[in-house]
Length: 109
Image (cartoon, rainbow, N blue to C red; front, side, top):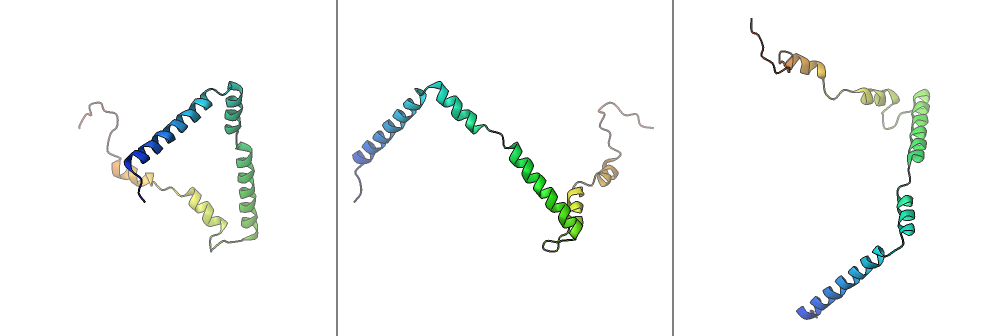
């Protein structure tokens, strides 16, 4: 059975009234509750991230010392990928070496 237009409109109005009432109640809450909730949300995860980074580094050093590979990728390959320069600046300097960036007039010999 399909609802009539009036029934669905009435349900939407009730829903909007409930949503407005919920937001009005939140606005009237004491300030101390909101500040404690905000401070709980803004906690730092630096310690957790530091521990994870330290564990990853220890695993990397262990794999390097024991020559352990993962799917054929060793520590030396990881180092190569980390130090890989995706933008070959030497080639760009060769290509655009004669272009002046100064913007002033250039004297031509």
